[in-house]
Each structure stands twice: as C-alpha cells, then as structure tokens.
Amino acid sequence: MNESKLILVLGDQLSLNQPALKQAEPGRDIIVLAEVAEEATYVRHNRHKIALLFAAMRHFRVELETLGYDVYYTAIDQGVASLEEAVRKVLVQTAATEVVVCEPGEYRLVHQMRSAWSSSLGVPVTVLEDDRFLASHDDFELWARGKKQLRMEFFYRKMRERYQLLMDDGQPAGGKWNYDADNRSGWRNQREIPARPDVPVDDITSAVIAEVNQRFPNNPGDLSQFRLAVTRSEAERQFDWFVTYALADFGTYQDALVEESPWVFHGLISMYINCGLLDPLAVCQRVEIAWREGDCSLSAAEGFIRQVLGWREYIRGIYWLLMPEYKTRNTLSATRPLPDFFWDANTDMRCLSRAIEQSLDHGYAHHIQRLMVIGNFALLAGLDVMEVCDWYLGVYVDAYEWVELPNTLGMALYGDNAVIASKPYAASGKYIQKQGNHCQQCRYKPSKTTGPDACPYNSLYWRFIDRHLDNFGSNPRMGLIAANWRKRDPEERAVIVQWADKMIEEWA
Ligand code: FAD
Ligand code: DLZ
Image (cartoon, rainbow, N blue to C red; front, side, top):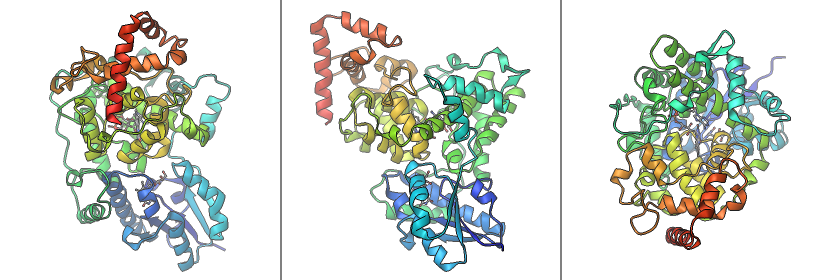
C-alpha cells in the first residue's frame, strides 16, 4: 500500500533537490511549511532574516503547488508555537502515517526530532542527512580521524581533488593551491564600487515585510532597505550580477574595510546558499568557468572557491563533529557582558560603529568586519562567548548555528581550544588602518596607545597579550609578540593595561 508521508520543509531547506523532497510524490504526500513562534524567537533575529525566510517560504509554497504538491502552510498569524505543533496539527487533518524531514542545521532541533518527536507524535519520524552539502558527516569524520590538527587548508585540497575544481591534470590550476597572499589588499579608493542591482518586491514579499515590522517591533533590521532575493531565479540573477561585475575585484579586496560600502566586491550569497536558494557546487563551477573564460584572475576564482568549497564545508564539519560539547567551550574564560553599543552602534570607534550599524540595519557584514572588527573587539575585550555567539546568530541574515558557532566561538573568539584557529585573530588598530579608510573618519588615532584620542584597539590588544601570556607564550605564532611585550618597561606595560581596563569598565 502506498501510504502518505508528511514531508516537513524548514525555512532554510528551500531546495527541490533536498533529500526529503526528493522522496515526495505529488498526489500522495503532504508537504508542510510552517512559520512558527519558536523558530522566530529563539534568538533576537534580524528582521531581514525573518522577512527573507518567510517570503522565501511563501514563494516556495507557490512553486511546490505549481509542481502539483499538496502543501499545508502555516503562516505566523496562525499562532502556532513550534514546528512539532505544526506537524501535529497536519497529522490530525490528513492520512499521513509518517514524517520525513531533512536534517536541520542546528543541533537543538535535530536532537528534539531524533529523541522525542516519534513518541510524542505517535508516528515514525525519519531525519535524512542533508546531502546538499559537499562533504557528508562521514566524509568529514573520516578526514578528521586520527589527525592532531584539523586545518582547513588540507581539507580544502581534498575537496578540490574530489570535485575537480580548479584542477589541471591532477594538479592545482596555476601550480598553487592557495592564492591567499593576493587577497589582502587594503582599501585606498582604488576602484569604483558598482552599485548593487535592485531586487523587485512583489505583493507576497510586501505583505511579509509589513507583518514582520508589526510583529517584531523590538528586533534589529531596517526593512525599508530590504533588498534580498526570495526566489531561486532572483537569487541566481543576483549571483550572475556578482560574477559579471564584482568577481574580478573580489579576490584583491576581499579583506578591505571600506567606509563607503558595506558590500564592497563580496558575493552577498551566503544567505541564499544557506536557505537553499543557491547550490554551493553550482556557484563554484560557475566561478571556475568565469576564470577559464578569462573574466577574472585565478586568485579571484580560487579565493571564492576556497570560501565555499573549503571554509563553508570545513566549518560545518567541525560543528557536527564536536557538538554538543563544542558549544560549552570557552578557552579564554571570556565572560564580560556585551556593551550596549552592540544594539545601537553608538560608539566613537568608527570601524566598529560602521560594522555594527550595517549588521543591525541590513543583517550583513563581510567576513573581515565580522572577524577583525567586531570579533576582534569581542576577543580583546573578553566579551562573554555565548552572548557574542547569540548576537551573531541573531543579527546576520545568513546565520544558523552550524555555520555561526564555529566561526564565532572558534575562529573569532579563539574559544574552542585552537581547533579552528592556530592562533587568535587578535589585532591592534594598525591592522584596521592598513585594511581600509575608517580611521580617516575616526576621532581615535591608531598611532596612539593610551590617552583620550588613542585607538582603543591598541591598548586592548596589549592587555589581551598581557592577560594570556601563559596561554600564548609557548605558541610559536604568538611567541615573538609575547616576548616583545615582556621586554617592555613594566611601568609602561602597567599604564597600557590600566588604560584598557578603564575603557572596558566604561563600556560595562
Ligand atoms: P563572500 O565574501 O562573497 O564569500 C563567498 C561565500 O563563501 C559566502 O557566501 C559563504 O557561503 C562562504 N564563506 C566564506 N567564508 C566562510 C566561512 N568562514 N564560513 C562559512 N562560509 C564561508 N557565514 C555564514 O554563512 N553564516 C554565519 O552565521 C556566519 N557567521 C560568521 C561569524 C563570524 C564571527 C565570522 C568571522 C564569519 C562568519 N561567517 C558566516 C562567514 C562569512 O563571514 C560569511 O559567510 C560571509 O561574510 C557572507 O558574505 P558573502 O556572501 O558576501 O561572502
Ligand atoms: C530562522 C528561522 C525563522 C526565523 N523562522 C522559521 C520558521 O518560522 N519556520 C521554519 O521552518 N524555519 C525558520 N527559521 C529557520 C530555522 O530556525 C532553521 O531551520 C533551524 O534553525 C535549523 O537550521
């Protein structure tokens, strides 16, 4: 007998080729999409993120119905508390005898589904591995097995070979695996940054925007500036635009900090790949073609592919390999509360204020802003690891725990016992000055370490080194800095540390 299945599709699983939907048969199975309070409120999500997912889910419903599927859609105004409740309600109304779902991207949900749903719903619940990623859990576990250090670079090389991306006759194209050294240029207004194309807002999306504004009045996000694609075809158009107009400069200015543009030459695609509107392998292949056709340099193509094929898959691998214990780590015992300016961008540190402001308003900051401006500040000031992680998880449109947590706790905060980063991504104001033009607009001077006009990153940096000498003294990559600090006059050191302490107290 052909019994009906209930296929639950989560807000970040909006791809026809995801494993649960691949099993669905129009006319027989029932598809459930549900906007629910629990998912919308478990952190203080940016309104852009909620609007993106609700609008994309509503458009996906239309697409599925056009393909002949029977879709049960719960909108947020129906007041359903959780995904489980949404599924229960549909089970009661239909003849479905089992639930099938693609594995969620967060441990909390996978755990609930695997441990409790079947008995509480009274039907079998199958959670299928999400095969839209390019390395399965087994692949990553096998790669990691027996290794003392899990460095991204070696994982990335394996992935290049496996997917034959940028490979020529078994060798990396151009003879080198990694062109990172060409991807670090600072910003001195070298280029005109092209304006991003508009995204049309249709009636479905307009209604979502109005509803999100009304229901989430205290969440960050200025939806008058909503400019996100909410369908696959529009996300593809945005990606095409990137390949045509920005990719050529992506590599060179990947690490640039730019006063005039939040986006610089970045892809702005993580939010689409992560919710299923773009396919990670397809974007890498498209970028390789652009290089082979002479539309961008090898360093631009390699820089991009390294992020998607390398970093994205590696970060996910680490998450599933080490959860749930990973989330309890706090190597540097960082426990200070987040300063209020994380919620209003009201700080005189120009780079930090700009990065936080655009994160709150648009739900977007590029990698170096996340890592070396906001993350670096949180690391140096010793901000509470879980508070910082929750901030990142809420604020960014592309944030789900599988990708946010290792990037924040591991890469930015050096909180995971050096699994991801072999040394802390700690830097003084000089790095920020080198990478861009914020300092020109800032009242603080990156050349000064103490005093009212000194860049706070400087004294914070030395205080951080001072506090963690025992942790880093023996790290070969930090040893020289630590030794230089030790050599400095003790009185001078004390003045710097006290100055940093004073600022930190003022932010509390
Ligand atoms: P581009 O600069 O154009 O890069 C292309 C693509 O590479 C991205 O779209 C993304 O899919 C992938 N990528 C690049 N770096 C990473 C990385 N470290 N991890 C995973 N994918 C990567 N990315 C998220 O998708 N969600 C997050 O919640 C998230 N949180 C982060 C938190 C911190 C503290 C840091 C340092 C990084 C975080 N990142 C996160 C990674 C990265 O910053 C974003 O993927 C990137 O800024 C997204 O913008 P883009 O699409 O313009 O990326
Ligand atoms: C982030 C999010 C939000 C805000 N709302 C919903 C929702 O109402 N319904 C849904 O299915 N998914 C939502 N999501 C995405 C989920 O939180 C996400 O699927 C899990 O965190 C697993 O990655």
